[in-house]
Amino acid sequence: MPRRPYMRRWCVVVVAVLTAGEEQQCKEALFAIHWTHIPKAGGTAMANLARRVACGQNPGLARVGPEKMEIATHEAGWLNPCCVPSLCLSEISCFASSSTCPFVQGIGRHTSSMTQLVDMACCSREWYDRTGVSFYRSAFRPAPSDSDLELAGIWREGDAWKASTARAQGLLSRLRSHLSWPMESRVAFFARMGVTLAELDARADETGLYARDVISRPRVAQIWHNFTTTTTTSRPAGTPPDDDTRGPMRRATDNMGACHRAAQAIHAEAVDEQIFAAAAAAKATTTTTTTQGRRRPPMPLNQARRSRPCCGAQSPGANSMTLFRMPFTRLASAYYYRGHSPNSDNYNLRPGVFRPAVPRKGDDTPYARFSFRDFVELPEYQNIFVKLFGDSHGCRDARRCDRRPACAVLAECHAYRNATLEDRHLVAAFKAIERHAFVGLLEAYNASTKLAMRVFGLEPAPDGRDFEAARSSYSLERQCSGALALRLDPHACRGAFFHNALDFRLYEKVHRLFCARLGLSGLLDEDPEVRAELRKADLCGEHDFSDVDFVCGRLARDKAKLDRLWRVCPPRNTRTWAWGFGDDDDGG
Ligand SMILES: *[C@@H]1O[C@H](CO)[C@@H](O)[C@H](O)[C@H]1NC(C)=O
Ligand SMILES: *[C@@H]1O[C@H](CO)[C@@H](O)[C@H](O)[C@H]1NC(C)=O
Ligand SMILES: *[C@@H]1O[C@H](CO)[C@@H](O)[C@H](O)[C@H]1NC(C)=O
Image 1 (cartoon, rainbow, N blue to C red):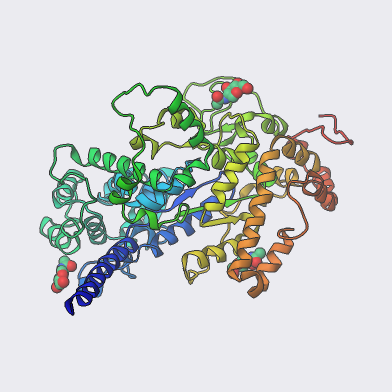
Image 2: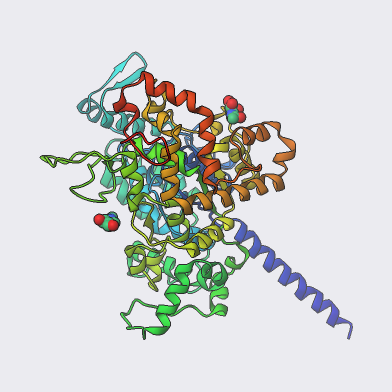
C-alpha cells in the first residue's frame, strides 16, 4: 500500500507540530521567582537581581512590540514592572513584592516554603493570579495629588521635590513611579496579565483615575483591546469558564490548588526529600482522613500529567534563588539591626519581653536589655538557615495546611521561631538548596552576581548597580561601631558557633556547592576577579567553615584592631556582648 507510509509520515509531522506548539507554549509560560530572603544576609540587594531575572525570563512581557508603540511608556518601553529599576508603588515599603515586582515571591518577608521549589516551577501563573491582587491595587491608582503632597509636607524647590518625613518620602516614590512606569504601560500590563476590561474600568472609577483625568475610559479600552490575552490563552484543562459565579479570587484559589496537587504528584521525588512530606504522609496513613470537605487525596499521576502538560518538563528549583552569608557575621549584623533582635523586635516574638521595634502607644514596659550573648542563646534566632530550608513546613501555620492544597501553596514559616532541629533537617535543607537554580554568598557578592547572570542569561546593567552588595550600613561606618567590634571578637564568635552549629555545617556545604558551580560555569578559570574575591574571603580552598577553630581562630589575625576599638571607644558601644567563652574571660 503506497499511501500508508505517507500517512504515517503525515501523522508524525502532525504530532511534531503539536508538541512543538506545546513546547513553545511551555517556554512562554510565566516565570515567577521563588526567592528566599534570609534576614541580614544581603538579600535586599540581591532581590533587585531577582527582579531583573523576573524581567529577563519573561520576554513576552518585557517590552512593547514596535507595532504597539502608540502608548506612553518608560523610555525603554517596559511593560513588566520588574524591568523598571527602583520602581516603588507603595508609600509604606519599597522592599516588598507587592510594591516592586509581582513576579518575585516574598521580598523582605524572611519566610520560606520549600514547597515552592515545585510549585513555582509549575504554577507561576496560578501563583501570580492568586497573589497579584495587592500589586494590582498598589499600581492601578492615580499618583498622589498636589493636595496630598502638600498635606504630607512636600514642597518644591526649583525642579526638585523635597520631603521631610518618612511618609512624605513614600508619597514621593509613588509619584516618581508614575514617570518610570506610566499609567498606559500599566493598563497594557494588566490587560496582558488577563485582567478584564470590566475590572479595570471599575477600579479606575473607584480610585478616581477617570475623575482626575489621569487616563480616559476610551483610552483604557483601546489599550486593553491591543494587549489583552483573555481571548487567546487557552484555559488549563478542567478549569471552569470565566463567567462562572465564584468570582475571580475564588477561581484563582481553586486553580492554584489544582496546580499544586498536580505538581506535587508529578515531582513527587523532589517533594519527598523534604522531611515534612514524609511526616505528613505518615500522618495521613495512620489517621483515617476525617473528611472536612477540603482535604483531598493526592492526584493520580496520569491525571496530573494530563492537566499540567508543561509541568513535567520543568525541574524543581528552576525558579529558585537565594543568598547566604557566613553565620557569625550575619548574627552580628542582625544584633545591631533594627527589627532583628530582642532589643528591637519586628516580629512580636515575645510580647512584653522583647522590645518592639515600633514602640506601641502608652507602652511603659521596662524592657530588659539583651547582650549579644543573650541574643545567641535565644532559640528563636538560632540556626535560621536550617529552619528556612530544612524545616519550612515546621511551624503551626504550615502544618494547618497539610493536605489542603489551596492553603498549602501560600503557607510559609518565618525564620525566627522555635524549632527542634536534628541532622535530618540539615540533610533536607541541603537537598533543597542543591535544587535551587541559583545560590550565592554575600562574602563573594560579585562572583555570585556573575554566576546568577550566567544561570539566567542576563547582561550586567550598564550603571554597575548589580554589583552594589548592600545598603550602606550606618553602624559600620561609625568609628566606634559595635557591629565592627563584635565581628572581630573571637569569644563572641565561639558563642555564636556553639549555638548555631547546624548553620555553620550547612554554610560549609553550601559554599562548596557554590564553588563547584563557579567551576562548572567557567568563571573560576576565566575571571581573575572572581578568584581574588574568593581568596580574600577564604572561600573554596582548604578552609572548613564547620570548624570552629578556623572560623573563630582566624579572628586572632585582627586582634590589634579589636584591642584598639576596646581602647578608644566607650564600653557601651563595644562591649554589649560581654561574653565569657574561651580562656581570657572578660568577666562579663
Ligand atoms: C493598537 O494596534 C494597532 C495595530 O496593531 C495600532 O495601529 C494602534 O496604534 C494600537 N493602539 C494602541 C492604543 O496601542
Ligand atoms: C520559644 O521557647 C521559649 C522557651 O524555651 C519560650 O519562652 C518562647 O516564648 C518561645 N517563643 C515563641 C516565639 O514561641
Ligand atoms: C565588585 O564589582 C564592583 C563593580 O565592578 C567593584 O567596584 C568592586 O571593587 C568589586 N568587588 C570585588 C570584591 O571584586
